[in-house]
Length: 148
Image 1 (tube, rainbow, N blue to C red):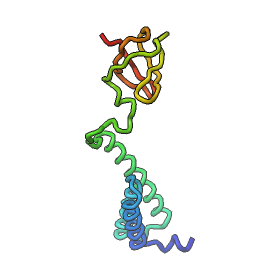
Image 2 (image 1 turned 120 degrees about the vertical axis):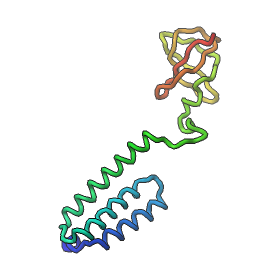
Image 3 (image 1 turned 45 degrees about the horizontal axis):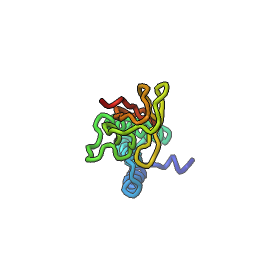
């Protein structure tokens, strides 16, 4: 407990620097926000040096959570532009492609051989041998429609 009562602006500044440096070695944009929260605590202690350790930790926790949530919201609204947007979304890579059914679609469900794997599909009932076009993806199920 005595260790906590001796925390000052320098301690929080060092913690901030260490967290931000660790972020460089462990990518993922998580430690950065903790480092920023520690830096906020350091700056706060410069102006309010009598702030007790409980309030320091509460401030650290609140600023950490708020900064992470705000970043995630910003990131969702401003996704990173890439030349391969469906790289890790395998099903989305098949949207727009046409395939020939090896098995019929019965009661709106079936299976489709796509490259080296078999996918569940949903669409209007069709006989085997019919060409279908992938129109969308719902998890691990490809949505298809009969190609005209």
